[in-house]
Image (cartoon, rainbow, N blue to C red):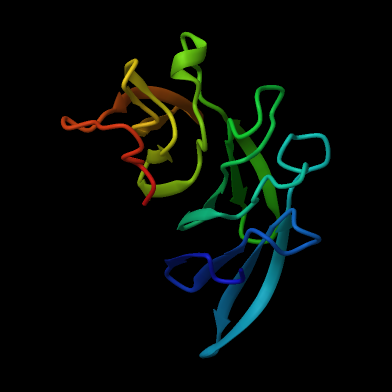
Length: 178
């Protein structure tokens, strides 16, 4: 699944391959130098993160802006039920990329559990949108309608701001899938 997700920012491209690396997933980073694209880095799920358990789908979604890369792992098991999901944030000083944050959804109760959190990502400045297309319980007949989590970086800390729900939520709508 090389190319399942792609993000471009200036002279960098992040390409997700969520079934590569023995099924665990990976993200490849390419940088343009003198008009030629070269692979410069490979990101794998950090050991013990919950993103390193099959089939976490590390790299199913990517968002890239300047020196920041967000990687969605929608089927990660970060100490919660299967498929809760997570987002890993990496930053670079221009030379070395380092993990700077791990984001998971905070759910008030099991019916609001964030299922497939990190299936879709979009970034603009300090604002990150995180899709969770199987999350949500509206009524006993309307569930798994999907959500989009709005997270803002404030003073270097990623802080949840709000959760968006489709006004016409319906069972299995998968709002937040893309």
